[in-house]
Length: 183
Length: 225
Length: 212
Image 1 (tube, rainbow over the protein chains, first blue to last red):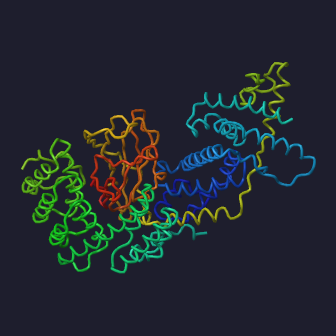
Image 2: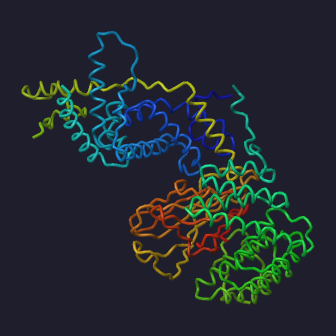
Image 3: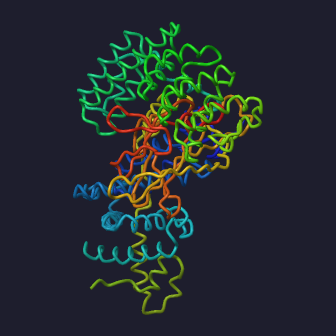
């Protein structure tokens, strides 16, 4: 009997569609950390990230029959989550607030005083990221948090490498400007 | 470890549709329609259930109204009309000699009435729909023909002829698309139906050479007798 | 006037250049930029312990809905057979220019389908609606939820499309254009929806789908 780890996403998706709903939990477990990190950086808070991720996972289940390539479930789920994050940001903007306004660090494990300064800088960068456009922020997060090369980013987001680089370079400049304001 | 790999019969999960009780109605409608509509529909559903009518179509209609942003009183009215049509369909099918019409037959009957069939026509179709013809299916086809614009008497006649000449139930399902093909070629719905009726005799002699196929090339007024 | 990073420093950040590649006068700026990037918090996000359980509870709830009861997956969709039936028809609304709805397309399952897979067929919905900014299909198969089945543009010619797996049975549906205009499919049979509008009808049969 094969172990959970050797089963491909495609096999699980097909099994779920055939009625093994409980198997969906394997996909949830596989991707929750990675996508939580993306959502947290996009939305600026863990709670918002959890909500967005939960919604995206349930919606992905609901529309599982629409997933044309079950082996690319992760990319497809990512798009659903991404749409959700963008929609959330638009909603916050309409309501005149950004989630970063709630003074909440995204991941704040206990640290000694020596690391306080680094934590402060991370917090400032987090705030600055919140001031970027969603596309700039996403490009930054994918490259510098998820470590994704431009080609992969292009595939995932549907943008060209050239436009991604342009967004990124604007993001760098903007971040520099914002960080200076915080000092 | 193995447990997660065993097929869990999810298909059996949830209450059977026919067993849905009226209390579930409010839960199903919660958040989808305003509370006053949910209450009213629950009342209609309780009443319908007591009379032995299926209530799932009522719930669906209410959800539809809610999703479309229809004003509350109109939603309630539409659900009431649907309940009345289910009742009417049942009377008609009983007159046809079907003592216990299935919920699907009743839904098809109500659909037929909303598409323009008369109660008498529902009854007549019920009479000719003996096994292997399921009234749920024949009524649906007749209703769809009417929805396409085939005058109900015409559509009914076509179906009765098809049934009498032994066209199988699955073949009846082709009728609406065959009418549509005829219409795409410029015929009216009535003309397209007439063309099918006239051709039926010859067609069964040719036999069906493509059970699963598209019937596009054979349909319509241009079919050779 | 905003002070921007030199292009080469940006390339450094992108990973296309190394610090050693930068001319001496840019090194300081390069290091500043690297420190900025390094400040980003890469620590993993700790999800609440009940996260998985909450997701699966919601998933099980979705799985119970009647439409999903006979939800089965077929092998990869076959070539969809196109049978276009264009009807002449009147413009509606102001925003949509001459729009004709194309016929419903059905794809068939592989011929000897195991009985477990007879309960659903793929149905492709197509609408020609140039000028629309979003299009969805809503019907009895998705509780009339206009967010559940959006169509996507198939190219730039104004055609929108999606393919859904629908269970066996009769379904009513309509297209929703720009979130507010409910439109029946003119090339499909239409019935009064009871609210003063029309719904379109499609029937999916166990043999692999029929346009009704």
